[in-house]
Length: 184
Image 1 (cartoon, rainbow, N blue to C red):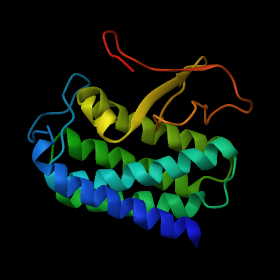
Image 2: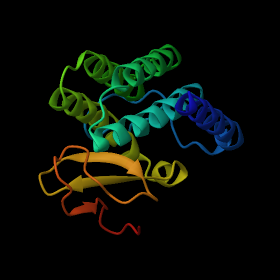
Image 3: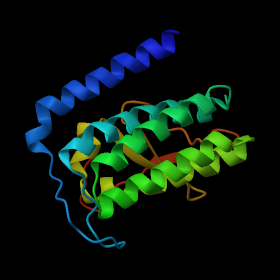
Image 4: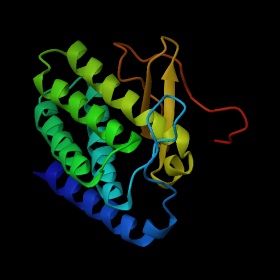
């Protein structure tokens, strides 16, 4: 109950943030999709992305703790947000990104083990990375960082939290991922 109330408050915060910063979103519609294409979303889809990111972070925290009891409910929330995003994002790379998030959420919902949950989480992460690599200012705006571990896994997590790999069975030395020339 408390977690749901916290989740609702966070979602409202992100929606409020969207309203305040909507004019600053640097996303352009209409680009084709390739690995070199800038991932963009429309302003209407941004609120759904915020909801996806909020739920993604809760899934991350559960995977770090190896707690799978609420993963199915969280995956359903991811699916709902992604479906709404698909409705608002007409076509192009942003639509493609949201489709991959929806597929990953479906796989997460069906996951029966920690490993299957981690694989589904990885597919959602991989769908999100091109957007944040295209718009690194969105990492800062959302208080996130892209992290990676020595085994090559990558994920997003809150910038203020200590970096912990959701894929490892034991905590290991992990470094935040920064492109050349970026400051943490």
